[in-house]
Image 1 (cartoon, rainbow, N blue to C red):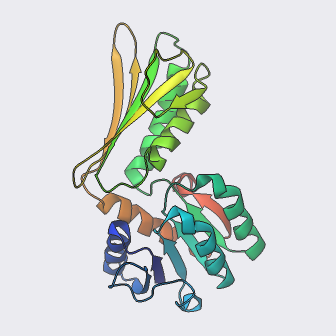
Image 2 (tube, rainbow, N blue to C red):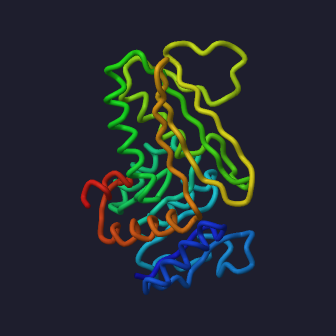
Length: 246
C-alpha cells in the first residue's frame, strides 16, 4: 500500500518505520513543524495518489484533515486523541463521502485485548457490591492530554458494565468519594512511560489488572495492522471491529 502520514511526531515516525519494514510505501508525510516532512499542509499534499491516510496530528485539526482526505476519496485511520466529542461529525464525513474511517484511543493490540478483559472483569464485579473500583495511568512527560484517550475508554467500559457506578472523576478530589463515583488518576513524567491499572478493592482483598507498554512499537504495529485491515472498507470502525473480526 502507498500511505500518507499526517503528523510526523513520535508515533508518526514509528508507524512510518514499521509500515516500510512490512513493504508499504510512505513517501508523503505532512507536518508544519517537522523539517523531515515532505509537505506542511494536507492541501499541498497529493493525497489522491495514495491508498490510505493516517492521522497522528493535533485534535484541533481532525475535522479539517478528515474533510481533505474525504475530498480525495481515500480511507482514513485516526490515531490522534482528545477529539471524541466530534465523533458524530467524523461518522457523517465517512457516510456522506462513502469512505472508511477507523479511529481508536489506542491501536495497541495488547491494550485492545485489555479493554475486553476489563469489560469481562466489570461484568463479574457488578455482581459483588463489596468491591469498589479505581483506576490510574502513567504516561511520558511529552503526553499532551490528561486523562488519555485510553483512560477515558477504560472508564467508559467500567461505567457500562458496573451498574452502581455512574460518574468518573479524573481531577484531584478534596473530599470523600461518593459510592457512585470512580476516581481515575493520571501521572505524567519520564521519557517513555505507558501504563494503565484498574483496581477492584474489597475489605478482604484487591484485584488489580495492569497493562504496561515497553515502548511505542506495539502501538505503531497495531496501527499498521489497522491500516492493512482498512483497505477497501467503507463506514466507521474502531479496534473492536478489528479484534472481533480476527
